[in-house]
Image (cartoon, rainbow, N blue to C red; front, side, top):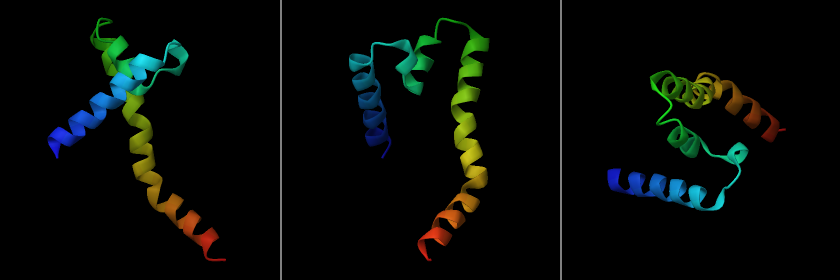
Length: 74
């Protein structure tokens, strides 16, 4: 499972780096790769801003699912 996950993420990174040329359209992986030489503070800020939406969704997932299923049952 680890090898499959690594290959999937590497393919996503490689595909995005080959076809996306504008910096404003970068994915999270490409954006983090750009921060590698910027220093510890920039990398930490990038990690926080890339993980924050996932954590927020995990907190409110129950309410989102409840709202979606309530609308589907009517």
